[in-house]
Length: 549
Image (cartoon, rainbow, N blue to C red; front, side, top):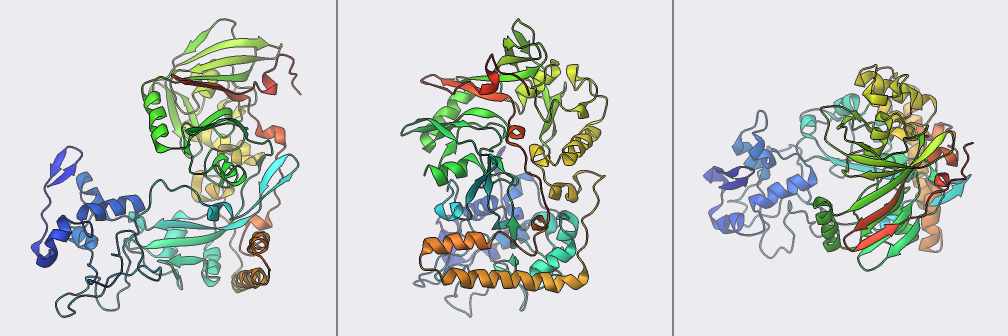
């Protein structure tokens, strides 16, 4: 019997899959328990179809085949090696597909026919592990023109083979799902040794993918700049860290942002690591941001959130003269696109409620106090747009893409697809796609129909690009070895990563945003709980004597 969402599920295991001498360890021990095999798959995202038993069988696959795929061969006693498939590594740091058998005559590997490509079982991911010094040392910051910038660096994108990729070649996957780059780029990346399958360099893109295949793609990464304004600590004790987050900096790694995030900056510049975000703020929203130092305190705060014991107060500057009396908006909000990050008022949306109170009016715009009683995505911004007073410089909800009324009263004279297309086109023209947390790669992947496919690299330049990339990698490695100290070697390694012959971003000239373009007039002013209250200073744009440019 196996527990599932609605009770217990009876699992019939073919007897030939159960070794009599290991029956106890199979179902009672920790080595090859089926629960562990399924848990490992779920955490690693490897795509073992057995994990979805309670959700129905995978297409074209029997229960017996799924159990065989999850079966693990036990190691020989006294071998001193960890069990492959339980997430740990064998001696020497390399994972093996099976351990030596006790009796080669009795026990055989179940990995397929002779000569068939062996796929190692997925590693078990350790949950709750924070970023380490190794991650923080990937690159460095520099400041220029009021902006915090990240030096370009190499980064490994890692993923297990998705179910829909099984049985298809790498060439097919890149051609259908990763169209941000032309196929010639991936061919050059193969020749330069940038693509790995199960930690072995890919030799041919025609290789067919299997369940549990582990892909690693090394890319040259460029992060968008953020404001150079520092992250100020408001409070710190043994349980919590509270900061005043500047606008434009994401809370945690997402999209193109990794080092230019609050989590990384706190780790690298304040040695505050293994933090648990207690809530989130939109990238363009500034103000009070809380992190727990322990899982226990994190759970305590989340219980208070569930019990509606937290009070949140925001302040914003909106377009026009906001009503002098208190205004409550209870319009439901629907997510139009998770990818672009756009919502709107819609009867099909989730219920929510925000209370507004005007604090001042300067003849053109109003400062408004906002009390969100629920926590929907973009709730304050969407409700203000609906009321006809969008945030003065909101790059999404105060955009002409919504039509003449800019979404007031929920009147949008276009379909959701047309709205998204026009929003993306507007920010693409302004070179401000980062406001939508998008990049040109997203457009090339088919987000909008009007985007042309990426330009093909000339065939005769393929070998030249790959060779150049290999030479750069080799020169950088030799140069770092000649330096005296590890610190000097690390700094030189970061500098050597700034340009890459295969990187299309390196060949583009992007205009930096102005610091004021990275500020939106929405600020988390106060967070209050049963036994705490944290308040940040009122931003400059919310002062009574502030004047618009």
